[in-house]
Length: 297
Image 1 (tube, rainbow, N blue to C red):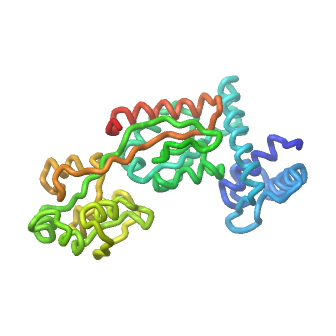
Image 2: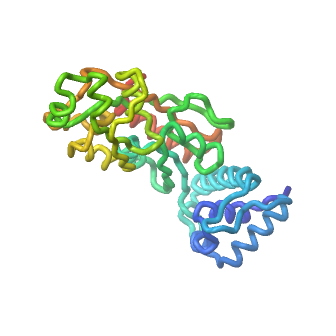
């Protein structure tokens, strides 16, 4: 196969932006020119690579070529920076797509990314830490913060530490629903706040304390900050990370409803095996921030 760089860039732009029009704006081309490059790439590959839907989606073959396209574009951007051409018209900053779990994004990841050298931009994908590796496998991202220690094929893994979670509530909620402490009966009836339907932390705590299947009334709040706010407002108890609640506990506005019990969720940095200075700079910044923010696992 003879795959041209401009064709690979067009594929990356179309599948990142979701439409031919948006890809054309990103590449400073007409939609017709983008379409022609995709057709030429499909002819070279000998198969259909994109589904012309809204948004545009990759076929299974398209995912394989997309991974190549993003690797090539990252390395091309590194080379442009090394040659001093990164600021030239037509040479956009290097974009690195990263999958990040919500609590890390809310607490320690953004300061880490702010320390990365200029000329690197980010396309952040929020996903539960148990599911971020899926985005690595299908080529959506080049790196991920994940709870999975086993490397995705073609990736390296670096341990970062762990986020510590505790069952937390307001003092009034604890007095109302846990008057005799964290008993199985109290856990079976006390309202609980869940982050989303992928969030297993509250269920892990319920199974640990009740030793049976229980279904207390619950709220689903799919935003890390709003999830913590729901607990602060007394809507229920929830497993909150220490990184978000240290000030609340010190002020007495939130309490641990189960003594010193906690769950440590280990986090890892997985990235494609590429000799990329830009990706390396991001990995270094993430590792440095994790070393000061996370619990040693």
